[in-house]
Image (tube, rainbow, N blue to C red):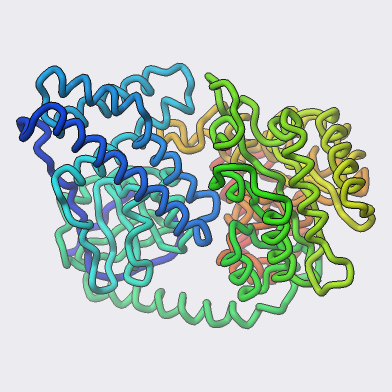
Length: 570
């Protein structure tokens, strides 16, 4: 008899396959020292260095497929390389602990330091510490690489770490089910990036599931059926067949432009984190890019990359999307994403600190050099994409004016004009959304960055499970705020895009189109589904739905209205 377990919907799609259970490695953290104190310290240092190097290499190897999400591994590598952790482990060894116990104690102490921080961002990072600690302990224990499935399986774990998720062979993962975690956990984010159905927070999962047991997983309903019966297996087999048939049909829409059933155009673009994304965008028929991330060029470099090095990458992206608009976001770094070659004082509140355009204005030569590289990559005579430049984390009109002055300086240095180049800003700070009517006359476009905008609006870390339910773009008041942003832009002949993760989510996408947003930019794999959904609904339906959603009693009701409208049930 089957058992249905309920979790939280974390990545869409369905799967039917045997379970592959990943058990947590048990290491004896009380093991006595096996050598002299100096030998134990050397073992610890070697293990920390090995994990740091492995995580750095993992970030680089996954950059093309994961984009910004690959930064997760760089942050974890920083933990492994933190001298404070090594010092704490050395102190524990001096007090008589063995290497395992010293590492465990050091990471636990560091974790408590973060958890006690008044900075919510740092407090949220405390959960990442366990992942790094376990990797260091595994190295000390001489554990071999984690086992991987040899056939297509549903991966089951208490909590899948980002590094485990990234290392699993994509072609053999039918789905992911975890007893812990949430839709905003790193594992869930990575699963969505890789197009893997996932359910998180499944109570009693490990008690009911063993290796090889057949599972039916629904990533949209948030359910896992253990040992499905014949009728349930038949139903899932049919849904998977329909999913595959639908994928074939979607492939036929490759050259069809994004539009509603009554012909209202909505550009459906792809977010680009590397050249592999450019190729994927072309394969799915994305209409350019509403977000090309550029920060990895800087974060992975020991010194500032030259203008020519930067221009080479930008030119390749432009060449890969001929005829389409390509929006490059200037480096979104600083604070929580420090640059190795820019020395700045530590900040107590990195999320609120000198990052994005703030760093560019604080380091004007760095910003001007990047703008020169973007202008140098443009070749009006070549068959390439149309260059657009976007500044991140803008808060005030004055920042926009100063950023544009940097662009003029870059153009003068390169001896080129700015004709035909669109300039815009990200709307991801509440102050910018509220002053949209003053910023709009200064730009050609807005791009709403929903992740940061919601984080700041709700004062809730988007990666912290305990507050993950608070931010929701379908909140009626958020919809009203976005409506004001769109009105301000259109009143000044500027267009509006959305480049956050919600651009591909059905309910929020319905809201965006209903509000009059002109472009939606998303992970390339999501473009065909939304292109298909819009072809079956008229603009008036979505306008009516978003009006009703703005007056809904709560977010749940608003989301239900919007989802029904896009699915044809409204």
